[in-house]
Length: 331
Ligand code: FAQ
Image (cartoon, rainbow, N blue to C red; front, side, top):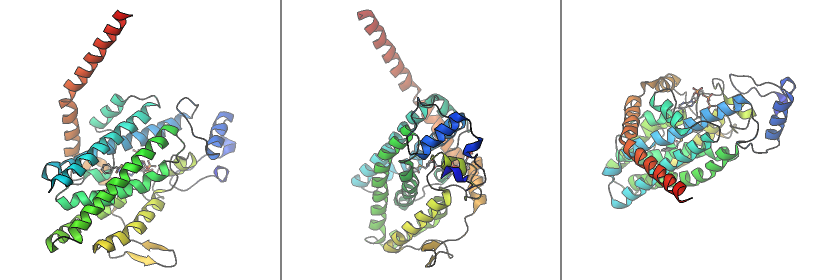
């Protein structure tokens, strides 16, 4: 596939004949489906691309705890509270696997977290929107985790071993998250009152378009897709995954009796896919620049959590040092 010169996005990818012998051998390994492990030789740009994507992904999981964490104390029953607590805790775990996967590439978690707190690192645009009602919690599980799974199942087959292995467990947990969100919406829409259904519709109206933006810019605008696909860091393009997500989600909305807020949405029998309306890319880029409804609040909350946790880190280091000294004395 590589020799045909991949050109699926805004950037171009070098052909095999333009590469050094070492780069060519590396590319041929990837084309043969052999995983790259941390100690293997890799082009510097491959390493940097992975650190960029994996760390953005890790930050998304950690910042992504905030919108849902907002509702833990207000969940309407003990059962829903326990489910939500477990979900938010899972997201923390995902962040930690991902920081660990990034660390195998020679960068430290502290460096990555510093970048986030300095406002220099990206995380998913979706987490800059507010959770205004309880229906938002169901909608996040259904749409946000649904989009995350659509994007992450292929990543289980990506070329970098530690990332692909982390994704297997993450995807299993994300499936549970998606189901719990949909289950919550079934309670509101099929078993609930007219008011509860209206609350779910309002949540869908607000989250639909930001969920579609999670997949990133259109293929024509995507800066990294062509090279990342050639390296099998990405298996499918942003638009391919977005289309799959729309196709999968429309029947789920119909089952709930909810209307997707897109007048241009319609089944295209010729393509075998749903056509959908234009995404407001100005909104997307504005959120990326830090001007979304909650960007500032999210960063403030993360910095505060980091500062409040300093005593835990200090205690853990003091304990480790004491143990090491005791072991050295005994030896
Ligand atoms: N938000 O050239 P591309 C979750 C940036 S996890 C912010 O297409 P690429 C679980 C992109 O970084 C959700 N920035 O880039 C959960 C790049 O900027 P850069 C996160 C975005 O990397 C659920 C620039 O635009 N998932 O939800 C976004 O090839 C519930 C150009 O874009 C992952 O991170 C965006 N939406 O493709 C947690 C999955 N889209 O670096 C809690 C792994 C694009 O040049 C609760 N990541 N950008 O400054 C990926 O698959 C890819 O990185 C994409 C972007 C597809 C996100």
